[in-house]
Picture 1 (spheres, rainbow, N blue to C red):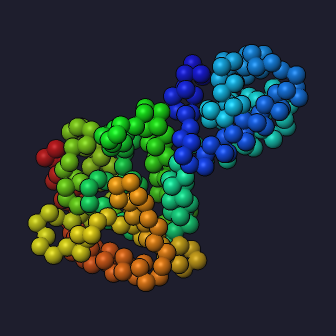
Picture 2: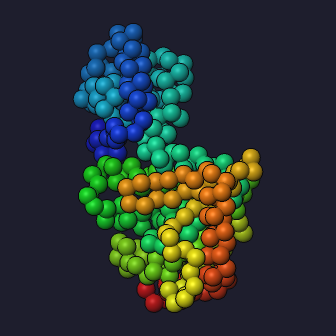
Length: 281
């Protein structure tokens, strides 16, 4: 059972830097095991995992779960040194671009985002996120899909972070109506918006499709104001992601986002609009 779980969600994407971290952890685990005089099968039996998985973890081909590291620490008498690797391993489970964005979001005092084709990642339910990744083409492998879903959901810890981060979102009306994953998935997603929209530090606005003037026609954008008083922009388009740090370019994005918010429905009107769409879904 442990082997099957790790086979599903522990496969590495070697195109980002996760591979180097996991390879290093694997080598360290091998050194600890050999120093303790354990064969692969003996060690696997002692910590509750199959021999095949022990080989793969030590070769850097599988990401060890927290329970694996805790079990190895105890059996090998590492005194917490192996368990201490859990933080680095946890971060390595997620793609680098997601880790970089999550780090920026944790450092932000204010985040503003305009979404024009799907719900913003911070607002997505697990079902919606899984359905969204599921329609990607070329199709993602199941283990990669689960990895991306977990990474997306992990970023939502920002809603409970202290001090509170001010979060504002503008969503195109079409994102409230497109049934990604089916009608019930969409309905639960709309219910999530209504729930999050009640938080004191969150404002959600809807941009109606019938607006004649629209400052967001260049595409989605995200703005992050950081604790050091600097600001950055972030955007994704097809196969590329772009971080905007040049103050002049950030200023342009801030101007556009401000106008987008002024053109959208107010937060109160937006929640009523979302409620209406939910009733129609």
